[in-house]
Image 1 (spheres, rainbow, N blue to C red):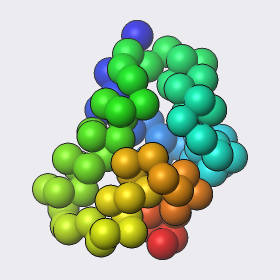
Image 2: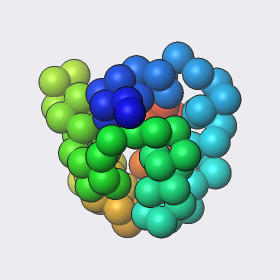
Image 3: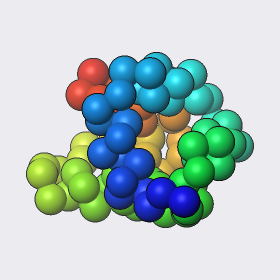
Length: 84
């Protein structure tokens, strides 16, 4: 199994994974995406890892924080890949 941190790095370098992630609309779909990609961790742990990564590189806006927390998955995806 992959760690969440390793998977985030993999996503950053893969247009295919980024495209698949952009199709995710809810927590259940994200959970399935993580499982399909053999990632050890929960949706919540994935979101926390993203928040921690961003915290080291910059501040999240309130909208971005809400997206990561599970409110707006398309907003989360756009934020994750710098399109927000």
